[in-house]
Amino acid sequence: MGMSALAITDHGNLFGAIEFYLAAREPGVKPIIGCEMYMAPGDRRDREARGMSEASYHLLLLAQNLEGYRNLMRLASIGYTEGFYYKPRIDKSVLREHSAGLICTSTCLGGEIPQALLRRDMSAARAVAETYLDIFGPDRFFIEVQNHGMQEQALTNPELKELAQKLGVGLIATN
Image 1 (cartoon, rainbow, N blue to C red):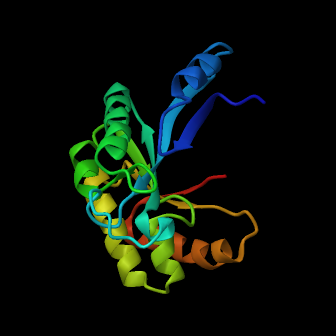
Image 2: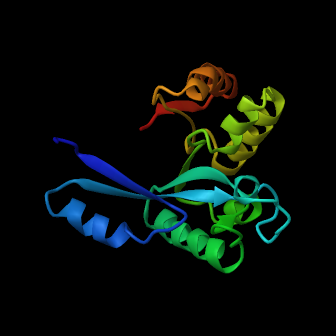
């Protein structure tokens, strides 16, 4: 399709990364390895949530370089070995420890920032965004918008754009 680069962002794992990498390299497409991690609302070892919807949020991480790829593998492993509760989860403390070489986006409606906006809690959304900004800095943290024709996205996209502007971080559109 004429694309020079393509990313893989499996949910919670890197199971398809090697096959994807090899398939992309063959025709000369730059492979970008990523993972849509599951973020525990608190400590990754906490098992108090009353169901899958309360147990985690989404957070997209992309490897910027080899160090980032190694950190992505570490985080995915920690999600399974230390944080598994319904899904393989990480938390902000382990993310901070292994954030080097990673690019972070606020993700889809399943992310902590959009979820706060859907609850009409702009201050919570900003606090979460500021945490990720502190971990990744303005060059590696992006606010993400999507448009799949969903009412919730139409509601949150303007607020996400405003939040990105207020924090001085990039705004990206994904699908």
